[in-house]
Length: 618
Image 1 (cartoon, rainbow, N blue to C red):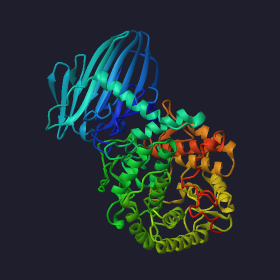
Image 2: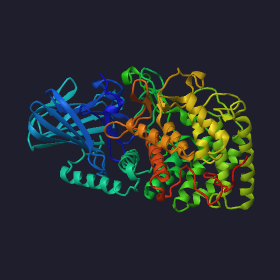
Image 3: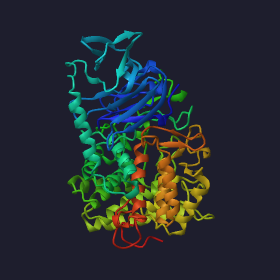
Image 4: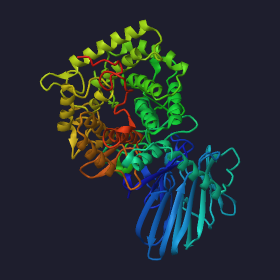
């Protein structure tokens, strides 16, 4: 039986991440990177597809867990009739490869324990060859991959599974180290566990202690930022959307996607979150990754890339994996990378503008990239696209796509660092005004006087909540107010926001999914901008209550069955939470923070969010 998605916690080394269940089982781990094949895949299948469990072999009366303060070190305490034991899980940082360290510490009495290790490389398919390396050490090899387990207790092998039974007494501590290496090289060396524990703890606490004060929401914000750091790839600067693939948006459904890649769409939001919190180095690294990833012909810019900026992300299915709670297919790769999405050009331009406004030094590549992209967008913006949500259906003239095309030209027209010549800025301003007029005419339902999902339809879409956040119109504009009201009326279920009306046939997949958590945070932001601060705070607190016991959020939440859905943990959810926290703190009890409430730089005149400094285009 699968654990619920919220029963997992993440540990990581800023190159990859593992999911650890409440039961002490590591059910998902890709090595050596987030987007590498998994060696533990029982999350999407059964224990036969790979897992690594350490837990009491006797009845567990109670399980409690937490992260060590300010870190990604997970502590799980098991209480049994015989006593209590604590399992500490972490992945050391910068140790010349990836390692999973598991410490079993006796707290009270004497507890009988069990270890079960099933290594299955290649997404649960390849059974490795096991060899003894010496006392307490086993290697597991299949193809290019090797894992080495070093254990302080005797190990046995049976039915392609390694196991052990042992007892831990009070104050006793046993260290188990699982290390990854390439099979054609020498096995990874044994770690000095005490040293790497101290260094890992110091790394995380020193990093998290730099988080800016967010008043009463500082600890929650810090936890989300640690999660985002854990989803980042330190060598490249890329940040993956989630640590997993194919966790379903509906249990038993087919909306199962691979999120172990880096989305251009998330760039402006992510940069703002890091800059809000004072993490300029992380913002700079992600900005630099972004510029490297999109380098080349603007016609070839993708909506997402691999952790290192790789472009080939071909989507295939893994039929040998039955999927989480039978939710098939399991997908590896993501064909959405080849979609045309107009919004990414706006998000890219806004990200560069946010970076400069946040004090990051301008790089020459930014000013060279902008004219090339805008020349391409000038021809592209009039065409239909796949939209912000990467729908797998007929291309449409999505309203937000046009708005983000406006953002691209608006930022270029307003920023001398992006566009050096006044003649070009004037042309971009004229194009921005033309697109603005198009959206005001074609993206409006005249009866309701609100924006709609796409030109010529009356469907609502939660992405429209971004219009005032990106400064398309002021939050006081009747069209914005009506849009927010219509989203509240048609897309809010049990207080949470759905992405869109799936029954309208926006794509070719069966309808049904949970509430998209980032959208609910965007509603918080809109409440703030409209001065509805009590409602903003109430919804924000409700969203915080949906986090699991260690502060993690998936992509979606089922408000009926009351469980998390989608890939986990989801960077977009945590980014939106961080930005809403700073916006709410700035608007309520901590106005001295002086932080922007929206996703574009503030300007000295004009309504918030209009980077042109004008009072808005009416």
